[in-house]
Image 1 (cartoon, rainbow, N blue to C red):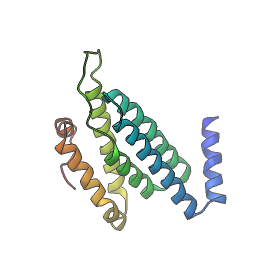
Image 2 (cartoon, helix red, strand yellow):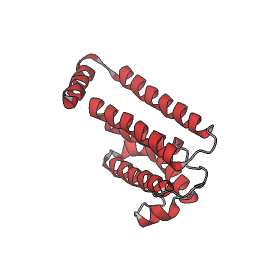
Image 3 (cartoon, rainbow, N blue to C red):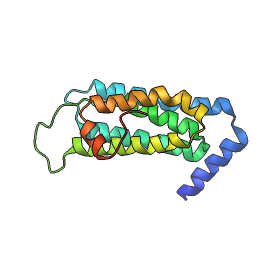
Length: 160
């Protein structure tokens, strides 16, 4: 049933929508990302678990958009936008828990960035040019932050 819903949406997109609708979809997702991250940034005692939960929800929006539109450039653009705007500074653990959410967050964030990098590599070089600055900013954000060691361990390059 769920696949039928996505297929129906995809057909609707192909038959009834155009470039402006795609731009509207992208703008809507970007606005959702900014609003969510702004709310998180204003949260007192923000922790990695809260950010990870929000990031996964937003990533589902991006993934759904790709399944409906099949727009590869916009998919990479949205992923770079999402990760560049994700809050990565949060309070350390106040109490010990069975799961280190900061480690889980860092691993998810880096692995998702690696997936984005692979998708970026498949794009035409002219399209890559348009996204290169955003991707460079993302790699810099990762390597200047607390996730640098995880990024090295998982083989994320420091620059393009």
